[in-house]
Length: 210
Ligand code: ADP
Image (tube, rainbow, N blue to C red):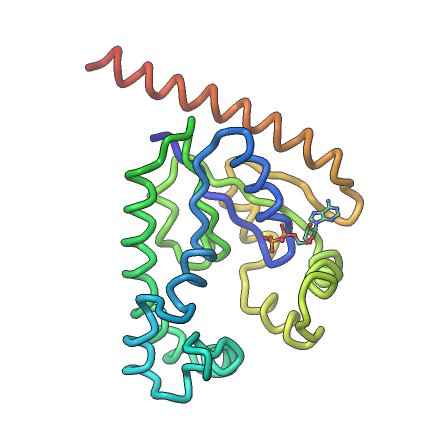
């Protein structure tokens, strides 16, 4: 199925964009949601994480202690790699299962760290970047979450830069501080129509060429 990799920094507006695309009939697979489910109480990653990082990594509710894990993964790249060695195969498996069941006109993989990881570039037909200035990202994330400015800054500085993302983008959705939701909506609708057209061309192409 024709596929889009949707990415952007924290607070750029990926979830908002994905929500509309799903409403209009795309099949959206959100790798962040998958990671959350895997690390929720009873999630498939919990026991492997407990084995790797010890009992302190799991909170009293049985979920991964995100604050604990975030501190360590940020401080030490080796810890980050260990965490990824548990999560990535489980995420890939869940993604494959969801993709096999997908019914929509085309597939959208929401991948926050698409540019950073490099694992995704060859798996999608087009990369779409939601582009936003850092000050607006900070304001949106602060308004949405209880995270401190210092924590948000740390997350943002560990993510790819705006320029790095734009360098790999096939499509760009500008959603900066001067973009109102109406303008965003119209831009996303236009891309949705383009992608539907691409999707039907690629289906026809396969049919024609056997
Ligand atoms: P991401 O998934 O990239 O972290 P979200 O889609 O969750 O970002 O957007 C972050 C927050 O900013 C959400 O509360 C969203 O509703 C809000 N938001 C996104 N774009 C706009 C915009 N153009 N105008 C106003 N609020 C926005």
